[in-house]
Image (cartoon, rainbow, N blue to C red; front, side, top):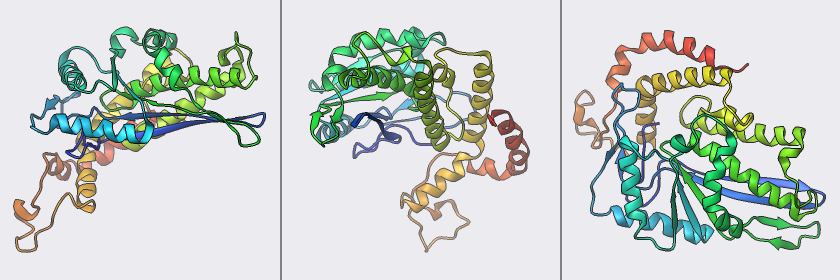
Length: 324
């Protein structure tokens, strides 16, 4: 959709809580992680470019927005660690720098900046150990929830990792799956299913099931938010980029571009209308632009003239992204 960043209440455009549940030999265990947009006031207006320019909105309430967001998280999850996966150069770098500056005002929240594309690239899933080495102590201290067959609570999760990239889809899902794997190893060792020197990756069938679950979750979230399968899914599913995955990512990227520029605008208008972001005024003719008291910059007018074009291109593009 066409929403980025946070509003003045500290709510962010894209916010998802993921719970990984494990049931084995009478034990039940879970790990919570969250993802959400960079909690600043910023926008990325669609303008037909593949990567529209990011613009940080200067507002006197910016610091309060950031503080309010993390206060709400602390009330719900206690300790919060913010992992920022955005690039450290270009538009993303400016946004990351602004975010880092605001986080300096929150000493109780640890902020970790990790340039995913620079460190990770498209190579090997295990490259994320560079990030894990930075956060492992706090992540392991936060722990996970564990209850035995009698209902006795053996462990409680004492905090949460909040991850973000720009759209909180692709880079974020790869990172969350890596942290989930580390936690799963600890959970299985704690319950005696694995020895202290073992990890889930040593058991091919179970490991593939784990990877598939996270890859499918990434796809579902991406379909909901962007209308396509997640990019970088091969890194989660296979631990490395494959040629087929590169082709799939390319087609998904093309589909995202088309949907974002020529179809999402009307959906955003509809959501703004039903959520009362638009206020309909009865005293003005619907043919005039002032009919809605609130407006957003979008491509809805282009949609009208490109409707017949979209009916041809979209089925053509999506036919290449359908894994079936």
